[in-house]
Length: 476
Image (cartoon, rainbow, N blue to C red; front, top):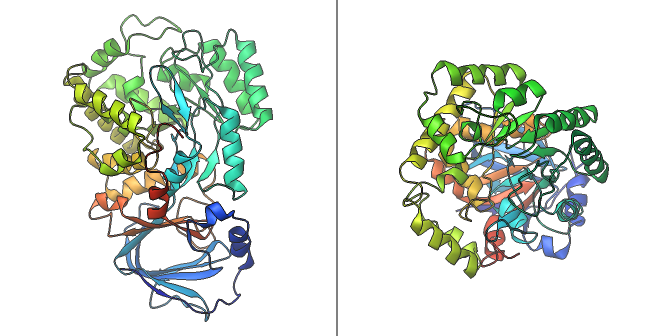
C-alpha cells in the first residue's frame, strides 16, 4: 500500500516551475490520467534500479523538481525540502522509463493489412512504463507524426515518439500499404522527402536491393540520421559493410548462410530457418558474423515476443491482453493461437531458443542489444503488454533482471543518442521513471505491477490508462 503525505508545495532547486508548466499544458483528457503533478516531490524508501546494470539499492529516496531528478540516494541522507510532496515507496521499486525500440503504432487487421491504433497504442505503452518509443516502420506516417506532435503538445497521453519512415522496400512487398522502390535514385528521393517532412529515422525492409540500401544509407547518414533494417534480400554482413546502424530481430531473419543465396533475393523463410537450425551459435560462421557486427557498431534489436507467438502453448494466456482487445481481434487471435503447432511444429521453439543464445553471445562479444516487442504477428503481441513480455523473455534467455532492464532502458537511450537525458535514474536527468509494486530483480514478473509512470516529472495512473483502452485494440 502506498502512503502519501501531502504538504504545501514550495519552490526550490532548479526551475521547479517547469513541471508545473508541463502539467498545465495537458488537456483535460490527459489530465484525467494524472495522479502526481506537483512541481516538487520525493519518493522515499524505495528500491532503485538505476538502469546501468548496477545492483539494486534498497531504501533509497528520489527527489524530483522541475521535471528533473535532483537527487538519488539513501533515504537517511537525501534532504527533502519543506513543502515537498512525499510518496512512501516502501515495498516498491523504481526503474527508468522503458525505451521501446520496436514499438509499432499499428496492429494486424487481417492478411496483409494493418490498422493504426491512434487511441489504444499510446495509452498502453505509457501504462506499461514505456516513456519513449521508436515506431520502427510506419504504415501511416502522417498519422504517426500527428500523434507524436499531439503527445508533445499534451493533447493525448502517450510516450515520447521517434517516428520511423515508411518502409524502404523493393519489389515484392507483402502489403499494398508499402511502396516498392524501383531504383537507388528513388531510394534517395524517398529518404529526402520523408526527412524533410519530419520523420526521425528510417527502416529498410525485406526486399530492398543492395544498391537501393546503399543509396538510402548514404542519404540518411549525410543528414545525420540513422537507419535500421528487417532484411532478407541482404545478409547481415553485407548490411554491415554498407553501413547500416541497426538490424531488427536478430539471427532468425539473417539469410547470409542460406545455401545458394542469390544476390538481392529473399529466400523462403521456412528453408532459411532449417539452415539456421543446422548451425551452432558458438560455431565459427555465426561467431564471425557477430564479430563483424560488433566491430562495425551495428546494434541488434531483440523482438522475442513476436517470435514466441509461433511456439505452441506460448505465451501464457494473459487476461489483461484479452480484455484490451476488441471482440473481433480477440476471436481472431484465439482462433489462430489454437492452430499453432500444426503449422510450426517444434522448430519454432528451437528457433526461439537459438535466437536467445545468439543475443546472449552478441552481448558477451560487446554488441549493443536494444529491445521492443514488435506488435505484429497474428495479433497476440500488444503495445505495453508486449514490452513486459520482452523483458521477461530476456531473463528467460539468460540475462539477469538487471541486465534485461538495462537493455530495455539504458541501451535504447544510448542508441537514440538521448542517454544524457533519459535511460537511467541519475541526478540531472529527466524524471522518466516507473514505480512498480514488488521487486523485479528477484521476480521479473513484478515488472507488470506498474503503479505510477512518470514522464517529464508528471505521474500517470497506470491502472486508469489500462482501463481506458479495454475492448479497443485492433480497431482504434
